[in-house]
Length: 139
View 1 (cartoon, helix red, strand yellow):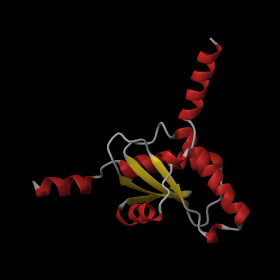
View 2: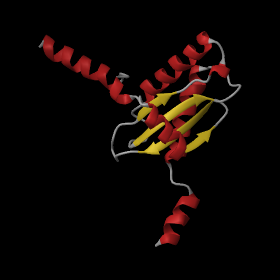
View 3: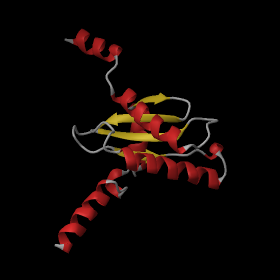
View 4: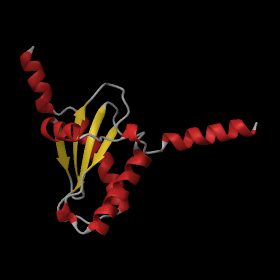
């Protein structure tokens, strides 16, 4: 009986974890996402996304330029972005790899980052009108 409780608890924790399988880790993949992916920005974040295998859980890569600030500021940004992803990974569109960085001049704010991450992910992954026109014109 105790094992069942522990098992369900660990499953719940695993769902919200940030293990290696949920990260974009290779520099080649970072480069491919930045070069071929679609990017959108708002006042807080810049988010780039590239389609992967449909239905695959979303993966995230975080890049914080040195111009953002000193190490303390950059690490705070990373912590807040990771936490926003960890809490909202179930709401992110599946089948995409994401690269996230702070918008130049923005301040690290946890609630703004959470709102921005979800809204940008939905904007960048939704097919826009010009894409559908291109597809229709090829047919």
